[in-house]
Image 1 (cartoon, rainbow, N blue to C red):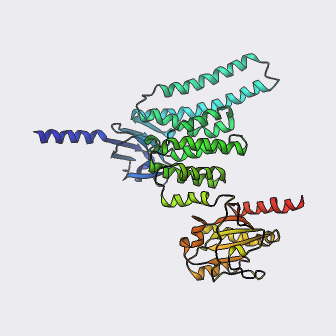
Image 2 (tube, one colour):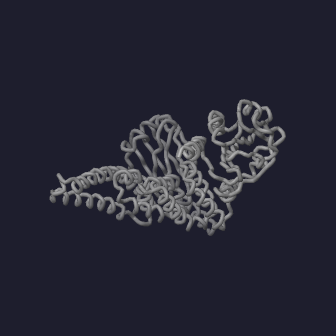
Image 3 (tube, rainbow, N blue to C red):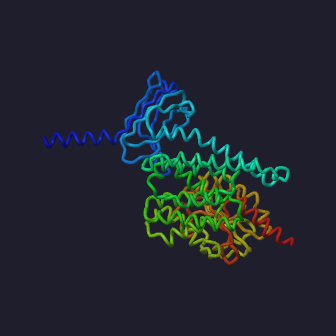
Length: 463
């Protein structure tokens, strides 16, 4: 009997943790429908089923914690829904791509999700419109004397905001949707706030800083990437000076890492993503601060590849002296150079170190562009040294045959002593050195390097 009771208990437990997702949507007829979910910056498919000829499909899934899922076909947009144990979902409608055509017949949290997804954008549009009118009635002398409409506008703004807050307040605080909807609202409203309601920017930034970026609910929401991007996009577009923006970004990085340092896996994932984001936006002061913070202050173990990527900011930051090295025996020199033995033998005022490879798509664009600009740079006292990370001698020779500047390769790729000494983790990578090998600039593109030549050398010589 004990065995029977134990078995019944186990079956009941398994049944409780399962969730049924049932759809009857005309568009799905005969199509393969995928049910997926999120974890961190990645998504994964939970199941894949072919719908019948009437567009009916049913999933039965088991999972431990609530989060956001999505239904998708080969030719539809994802339809997002809340996955939570014990809450079955039933959907009917026309098309997954048009949320307005879908009705949620079953699933309380998903009904609330659908209702808010329909109402909130309309409230946001109204807020922006009333906010625009409010500015006119405050700033324009033709309207500012009109007390009645000014008062009516203020009252309507308050009413709309209160209505939105009350909707969220009335949701069961223990449910996943009660956390998800305000977080989704925070992320989705960023561009509107930046464009139309700048007075809300400080409170919105504070809300982003208050987010726990190690929270499992955020990791399972599909919002992690958007939350990080929106947070730093708003800082970048807050209307402040660039110096002030970098100060704000440092504050935000500190706030994010307060709880992230307790979770090694999430720390690595978010650091990697944020570092790449800041680099892509040329926010190098912020990416340097992030790199040094992680390397100097965080006790967690950093992934080897990420650690190498971050270490370049500590070892190769502006003002440091770049390593000297001997040129490889197969180095190709321009005719006007007397075959220097090592980097320090170059007597030009400046040297641009360029790391790349024939297999790098970006290098195939950037290196020829450097060749085109070389005579201009050379005339201003800038030499170029290209260190190839190719493995095949023929690939190297073919790639550099038409280049007018120093080109060298030892065919060891990432294990090249020079690449390791300069902490190169990607191609193309550039460093601008002065005649003492002090790092003057870490250009993120040929365009930035050329702008530096124009501004500091050509324009500087004219003054």
